[in-house]
Amino acid sequence: MSQSLGDHPELIVVLGGGMQPDGTPAASTLARATAGADLAREHPDAAIICSGSHGVGRRPKRSEAASMADIIVAAGVDRARIFLEDQSRDTIGNAVHVAERYLAAIAPRPIFLVTSPFHLDRSVKTFALVVGPQWPIRGVASGPASDDPERARHEERFLEQTRLYLADTTPGDIAGIAKKLRVRPPDPSASR
Image (cartoon, rainbow, N blue to C red):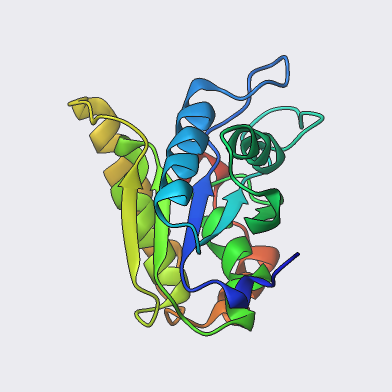
């Protein structure tokens, strides 16, 4: 029996991590989906939102979101618990599209945000800037962290660019932030 998203007491949001040129999930997408499936089994009442279209380059036949949903279902999670957001192409797009399509229509509840370790801090902070403080967000890493100082600098730069992009918005004003994203998207090189 299908439930609405609002029937679930917790949400697991799994962010896509890219697709290979042949249309298969990149290693980071596979790791994130696997971590999302593990978390879904630990939280059997949670809904899962798979988020992502594709990154830079040509659009694959299947979105990151659809590919991750298949991986999660293959790991034993009921497809009725899974919701897709397949429009976003970057981190801020993940946050805005998930918020506009799903979160704006339901009462706040805990969110587990699943992504790669290097991407975790920026993702949690970006989602918080979009959805506001009423949504408790806990980051969940899809694997062990690495100590890559260059990657860390990139993530810090991307987060600062996101903060500047959202500086004239109010956290939690999902409609206003979504409108801004449609009217003037951020520089794509600044947010993936």
